[in-house]
Length: 251
Image (cartoon, rainbow, N blue to C red; front, side, top):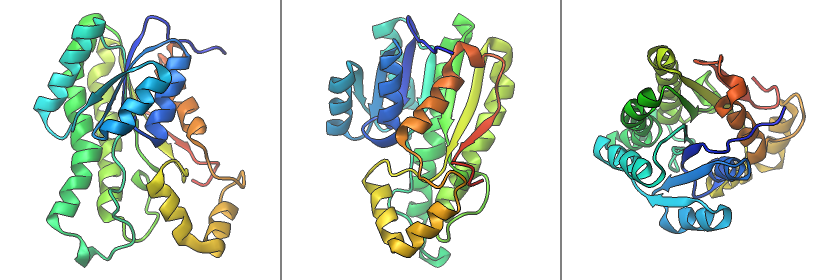
């Protein structure tokens, strides 16, 4: 099965590094016209230069920012067919007791992982409905499907919310030719934050983690990108509201 995106316009958020960069790269290599969004100006510019994409430096935590981004993409490329929300993450919040989580800590996780996804879908919906076509993929997490690590209360809650949003949008957008699905990665060493997390486990913790994975290996950004591109493809046109765990069988 060959997946191509010639004449398709795509947006990937969180594209400065990690999974977002891998997904954007795979889309560009498959023929898409790619727009990138991230708050990391240097990182998103580096990705854009490497793959021939258009960078946008933006914080998507407000509806105004999301609306302006979608309008800018449509003005430049004429449409928006594919959208991947890969921004988010733990924002450095790992392994803390619930008493240590401030309101600001809680809200910044939801802003990045859930609010931005909602505001982007809200802004993109009229564009995709008008064309009668769209593919939206959210990057959630195994933590959004079941309890996993101790001390990631805000992150796990936000990813559960993102899964719920994905399913609701699939129901609402389906009649308009728009599919909405989610990829839930297992542990992938994709950026400095995940590298620090991996190192924190120590040799024994790393060994236990790998032994709990059916395939006995960690995932790679390319593994996540491949699953995402399938959901974005023509071949996945009758698949919506689904969450695909890409975790080597750990779930």
